[in-house]
Amino acid sequence: MFLTDENRAFGDMVRRFAQAELTEGALARAHSREFPWEIARRLSEIGLMGITVREEDGGIGGTLMDAVVAIQELALVCPKSADIVQAGNFGPLRTFAEYATPDQKSRWLPALLEGQALISLGMSEPDAGSAATDLTTTAIQAPDGAGYIVNGAKVFSTHSPEAGLFLIYVRFGPGIDGIGSVLVERGAPGFVIGARSAFMSGEEWCPLYFDNCLIPEENILLGPGGFKKQMSGFNVERLGNSARSLALGRHAFEVSRRYVMERRQFGRPLCEFQGLQWKFAEMALKLEAAQLLLYRAVRSADGGLPSADETAMAKLACNQAGFEVANEAMQAMGGYGYSTESLVEYCVKRTRGWMIAGGSIEMLKNRIAESVFERRFSQRAG
Image (cartoon, rainbow, N blue to C red; front, side):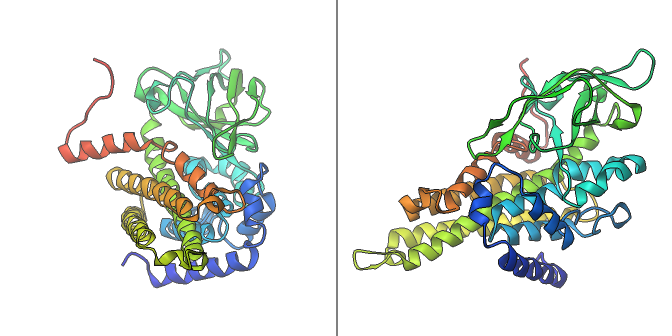
């Protein structure tokens, strides 16, 4: 209903590529601390990086649906490769490609789209997570007018150990209208990248510190008043998050489905036990329902920015379905599913994190409730 013949043909191409080139080494990639640069460059060569970026900017000029289809097909074979495609189409790269100046694009976009470099987002702070408008990292114009001086700190930045460019949310002045963003290069004076830390999934991040970090005027991405544009772009990031979460849930489902069809206990295959039959029926229902909500949000966003309401519903459904299905798949496989010899436990850990990242499921419920009651509910004290 939502996929065109072109989307399906594209998905078939991605599936054949993944099965031929990514099957071997998928488990090792998932558990490696290193970013798979060779795979990123190969994905770029076949047109899977910058799918959603305009052709005149060096991208493919495809649709959001194409990017979602690519993530889903890759994740069924190599979940880590799906992460790479997400980074090459959603998140800070998409915001950068949408709002950067021609000069900024010419300086940084080619390497990002060729799988030679990564961009990291600095939004969360030690005291400003879900309440993003409470951020305190400042960008003050230098006394001589030659650029801006940035002071503050960021946490939980994806790809921060490897990134060469950082899109940093800053406060130019008071209030929401004072929030915008700047581009900071790795190695900039006054910019310190702290020691590596790891999430439960094994994914690593570094705290980012800005101590009188001077950036030139041409490194401003969105000046004062840019917050709403940034958050509109962030809804696209949520669709990428949703696609990965659902795709990894489906990966775990398929691995576990094959396992219970082959594994025998008490003289018969596990799939002949009604308890497991009902479990898999419920898992299939969750995956299909979430898939439809994701496709609806993506299809309505093609040619523009996604609906905040539809995005919130899609992310909530995909986050919950992805984790719950992966968790049940692991349970069905017993000790083998819990072991690092299978990618199922990796899917469980990754999908659990996306229930927090990119807008927690609780914040999404708040957003949906506002749509239901057609009014805003402030979460602030008083």
